Length: 303
Image (cartoon, rainbow, N blue to C red; front, top):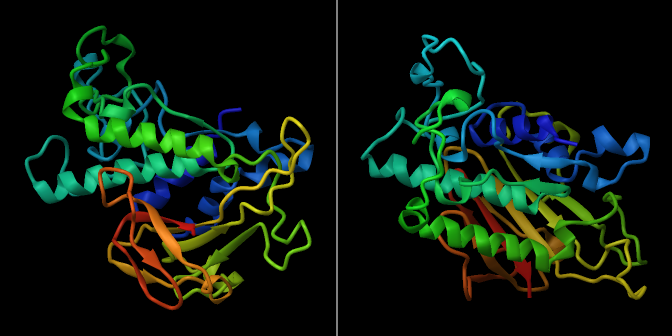
């Protein structure tokens, strides 16, 4: 089913709202608090950030307020509480700093969506910056406001290519679309859990840290060697291991690989400050600090 709590939590996290970290973690890992108790599995959650109603992804990072004047209802129609953030300036702008932040935020939303457990739903046009000029209720607009402008595929080809690569990346790695819930423990006799949550210093997250109202950064370890499922022929499914560092704070934060994983090298495969997937990304090992820019995501793959 459509997971509206996923939409709300992810929007709130990336616009920098306080007291969002714990719920963001639940939503990213499939929303077990919503579905597990009645026997449903992670694929019960249809994850989405935008849909046919409301802001497009482009408008979500470009407008604080709805702009439905063209609907002829004095802007009284449409949802008032959009959980959006305009990145510093309302609507269209020439400010390069604002534009760069909007580009990064689009990639943040897309990476979060595609690497979450569950089934991702992407609104058509979000992959190339479709806009409704801030109109969040375009049901009556059979015109340029609601139409898909295919020229945007050329103008925003970097985002389109990034989205294609991201979808392929998800498909290639079953650790991002597990059939069963995370257990928080080792499954196949190893001493490493199937998932781990870490603060920027590399220590395991404590209950107190989850509940700090201003906490906006977390590291997640996903163990591709601990997937409790079999392939079509009954073979054990084994994937790579990943660390994902989320930073929704307004300042750069340095992360450290948790001590138990410092014996291996880790390579950057995704960095949302960059417009394309990283090829031959920088490698880290040991206690070397990993800079994660403000409002960005870095994904590391164990080598």
